[in-house]
Length: 421
Image (cartoon, rainbow, N blue to C red; front, side):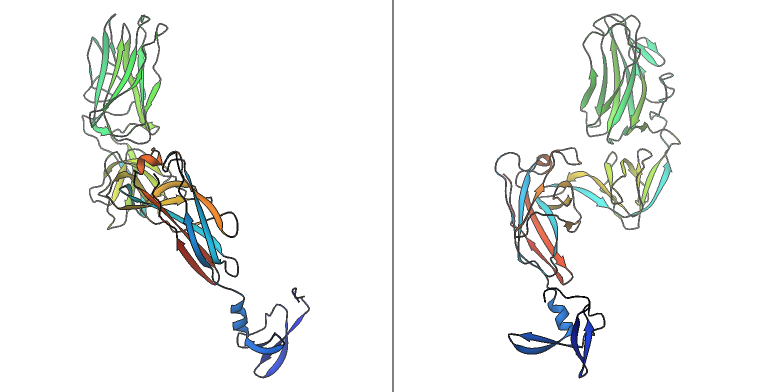
């Protein structure tokens, strides 16, 4: 009788009258009585009791998280997870996983949902630099900023005599906020350059730190008609830029792009993300790189400013991919000594990001049946651009939780906490 046939009948008693029901029990009511024989003795039970006996809630017995000796603390490390079930439940339960870290961590502010995605027309002070599509016309023309040449020349370039250097300097007001990339394109003219000629693109951040994006002291093969774009991908807003040439070369600045788009100019429309009343945007600052959370996580950009009413983030460019209903996540900032961040996981337990908002349990596909095993695996780099060991200082702990659920119920268990050394 292990397999019931479609034509089989079951004896059912309803209000003192016996009936035969089809094998699928589709006409049986919860109050009907079924005849049960146990060890040669007949018993009766309601159909509801019989149905309930065919399902059982799971019971997670224990969850163990193992440390990994040697190597990095988190970077590229796969921590073994094991879940032992006291009862897998009827039907067999599905498993989900959650992981979080705690310690003196930086945290990324996250707000939402976005109530509206629109545009804002930018109005820049007269002293700001502006976008150009070609070479500079003159020091007070297309860029309209504090632009000067240090040697004879002028117009769109500065020219160096043999044995001397020339510079083209510009100050950004306000500074260019850091996004994912800022590209500077210079032009270096020929004028019969000597073999030891060189050219540089030097940027200075608002904190005073300078970066030489290109310094080539190798011999140029005579005249160089243009200078390729070089990209800054560090962190911090750019306050000024210098283009330097030497030994009969001339230098100029052809253009600057932020995230592949032109530098802000008067009258340019940029993306504006508006939130519901009561949303606190005070943690966002000029230059903060932000990303979308939800709806494919496609939105990316950089904050130019918070609107005067405190309800909108005005970005530094026209940014696509933002969706109403999504959240907005900012960069990591110092938070405190006891910060808890949740891991964004996939079904294999791979960590792709950290967030302050609890994402809930993620569907998990472990190996085995008793115990269930898998790993929480950290990447080489987080979206912050840093290795996990850089964002998670020594003393950071990690803990996991496993959830098992079926139609009869849900149970969860928390692992031991480990401190990778």
